[in-house]
Image 1 (cartoon, one colour):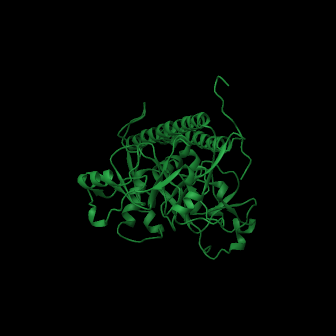
Image 2 (image 1 turned 90 degrees about the horizontal axis):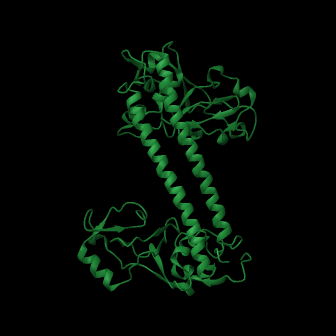
Image 3 (image 1 turned 120 degrees about the horizontal axis):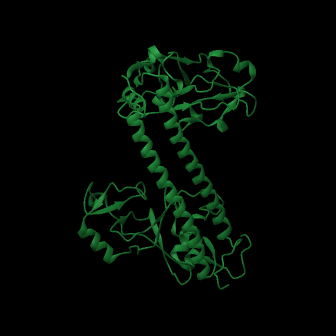
Length: 403
C-alpha cells in the first residue's frame, strides 16, 4: 500500500465490524404497494417498486439484523460499491445483495467510512473486477484510517464540498425548468417579447427547409476514421445535449471531406441523428474546424427567406420535435429516421425574422447560463476527487485551529 502518515492505522474490514444484512424476504411476501418500501438491488438508491406489510417489517426488524441511522448500505451485487447512507426511515433491504458494516465507531466513524468506501477499489485478489461482494472478501479488505478527530474533519470537508455540488445541481435544475417554461411560451406565441405583434405562421420542414443526407458512406472502413487531422467527421454518437461534442469526433481525409459539398457543415446548421438513437439534435453554434457528417446524420437548413436558422434550431431542440419523434416510434422498434418522415414536422414561427432571432437569443442565453453552471459543477466535482485522493491518503492533513 502507499505510504501513509505514521499516526494512521491499518485495519481489515473484519477488525472494524461484521458485515450484516436484512433477513430474507420472499417474493410472495411483497406487494406492488404497501406500508414499507422494500429495496432490491435494482432499486437500491432509487425508488422502490415493492413493499412489505407493517407487521412483517416490525417482526423482522426486532428479530434480525437491521441498520441503524447513519449506517452505510453497500451494493454487494451488480455494480459493486454503490453507497446509500441509511436515513432511519422505515424501509427494508434485500438480503445478501445489500449489506452494511456493523462497525465500531470508536475505531472508524460512519461519516468517514462513507468516503473511505467511495475511495476503495472493489477488486478480487487477482486484481479483477468482482461481480459479487462476498463476506470473506469484504472482511479481508483493508482500510488505513486517521485518528477520530481527523476523520471528523475530513468527513466535514468532503461533506461541505458535496453540499456545494448538490446546491449547484439544484440551481441548474431550476434554470432548466425555467428554460422549459420559456420555450413553451416563446415558441408558441403564448408570450411575446416586448415590441412584437402580428399573427404567427404554421410551417413544415417540407416547405421551409432542406434536409440533406450523405449517401453511400455506410461502407466507410475503420481505416478511414483518423485519430486526428483537419476535417472532422460527425456521427450520431457525437451529438450530446443539443450540441456536437467536437472532442469525440474522428477525422477523415481531405478527399473524403470534399466528396459532397452539400454535406460540408456550416455555422448554424441543425443536425439530426437518423440511425441508432434517432432524433438526437445538435445546433452547430460554432465550427472549430471544417467538418462533415456520416450517413447517420441529417443536416437541416432553412430555405425560406422568412425563417431564421437560429430559430429553426430552437424548434428542433424543443419538446415538440421530441413529441414528433415519439409519435413516429410509438409501438415500434424503428431504428432509422427517414427523410420523408422528418419533412412532415410542423411548427409555429413569428411573422418576422427579428422576433425569431430575438427568441432564439433569449433561449440561447439561457442555454449558455446553464452550460456555465454545468462547467462550474464539473470543476467542483474534479476538485472533490482531488480532495478525496489527498485527504483519504494523508497526503494533505487537516488541522484544527488549536493545532
